[in-house]
Length: 133
Image (cartoon, rainbow, N blue to C red):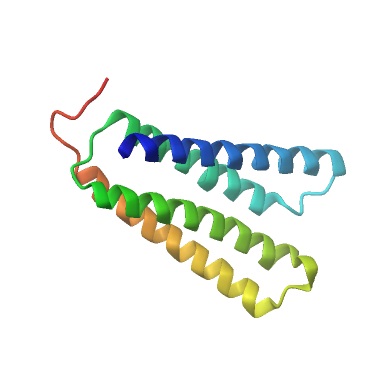
């Protein structure tokens, strides 16, 4: 199961990496940096953090399997929620209701915060001789 979460998180991070670099390319080509905070969070949270978590699960064996699953889901939901919420809040596409956008942004960020806290717990649940490599 942990192997599945490793690959799942790495695949999600690859998608974030593609979206983040596309946004950076778009900003450079357009000469507009309106997407700068969204671009930065997509790359730092979606690509870098999610990728690091995926690699962690490949390297270490975690005793608490349900905690791995809970962390994985909060990582995916939180990183998508935060970055999509930022987009809705800052770019205001499609005339989205401002209150909805703010709540989406806050909930996404809160789920991501929970994910980071869960990861701290995950690191404490590593088997002592769990190095795979």
